[in-house]
Image (cartoon, rainbow, N blue to C red):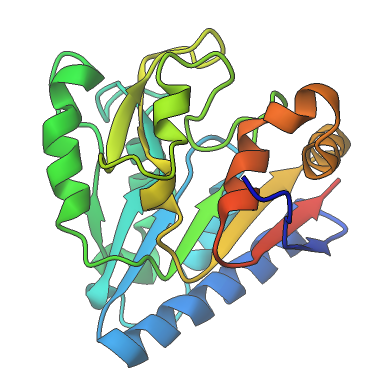
Length: 237
């Protein structure tokens, strides 16, 4: 794996300023996709960090009826569950002008992610990749998407030759079983963004970029090092 990591960091005073700038940048990428291909594709992360970004992006002026949105990963829970990423996307992003966008969920309703993998994979395979933008988050353990340290399928999910578009993931730090886009699928994007907040995550990312000690194996480092496009990091304290 190459050790060259091409990252540009954009720092902001607070979360609102970050969310506003990131929403404007992603909206521009979607508009560019609409001009070039007559449609646009966006993959986003769940959790609490991106909520302000979602709400501001939902107000962007563009033809959302030609935009498809999906998730980079999902907890294997129904959309009625408070920890569902799909629930967060529907409640915070697919509102206002963005209510016209179409959404492609990863959760299928099957009993386990292993049982739902084939259907979720078909949904992702049907998308006309590449994505116009992928927006990732990162945990304090260096995970991104559902590439968790100690994950039962981490090596397979990070394999650059992995033929499957999605894989199940179970890990001690993951809570619920998960399903995630695999690395080759995730990196089929024209623009890659990493949205992190807090001094602790800034330090984790710095360690990952240096690749010293345990940080050499952080999943986020693998993603950034393998990315064929530069990554834009949006950070605030």
